[in-house]
Amino acid sequence: MSRTIFMNDHLVPEEDARVSVFDHGLLYGDGVFEGLRSYSGRVFRLNAHLDRLWASARAICLEIPMSKDRMAQAVLDTLAANNLEDGYIRLVVTRGTGTLGLDPNKCSNPQVIVIADTISLYPKEFYEQGLRIVTAATQRIQTAALSPRIKSLNYLNNIMAKLEGLQAGCVEALMLNHKGEVAECTGDNVFVVRGERLLTPPPDAGILEGITRAAVMELADKEGLDCRETSLTRHDLYTAEECFLTGTAAEVIPVVEIDGRTVGEGTPGPITQKLKDCFHALVRQDG
Ligand code: PXG
Image (cartoon, rainbow, N blue to C red; front, side):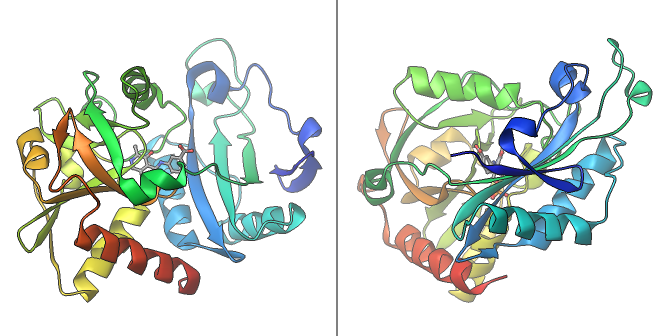
């Protein structure tokens, strides 16, 4: 079935949603994106996603040719046009059509694309039994080279690590920063439980500041858990009582094995379970 895509202020059939081969989004990965979810027709933390999209665009000197309000409406219109209540929304803004050279100032007409679709979750058993992950040899790109806080169309750093995970028979891979500290997974943030504390790497470890991560930190606070941003090593993960990942696509998913080491009891822990339940309740009530 053909989907309906929002492209540059119009809803069009998928077949008509096309970009130029000269678009720098394609030629150089020059552009930004967001991934959002809707639950029962409500988009989870839409404003936070829009703010992050605008921040990513600002960081690369890309002016998004519409207001945040218009983009918010486009998201709702695209979901409605595709009859989606529980859906996944991809926002893409490309640099636009330019010449065969890097110069972004020679580009015109940034393309604004909104895709709404269903999302293929990890199999249910991963949520119940937990994931096995491995550390990728591919390091998270250094902040001084390209800030991981920019959600850019160039995701090769993450894709290289994802390939390593897949080659090792895992659906996710852990990425370290250039100092050997834990950064994040290829499309998810990482948390561990140690004692009564929930720990997660800080933004300067070279991570995307996940919106699910922020929501889980708020929930932990409400549950009376002490949640801290702190630098973590692989040793901290191997010896943690619990470990889980957060992300728009993955939501909250337990990790039970890292690099062949069993985490905790090798089954999803009680704090992970609690936060997962709280998160599912939150997405049904939060705008
Ligand atoms: N780190 C990275 C590198 C990400 O790309 C997250 C953490 C989690 O952030 P949020 O805000 O989603 O909690 C991401 C998000 C996909 C997909 O299609 C990837 C993400 C989000 C949605 C879909 O693989 N990455």
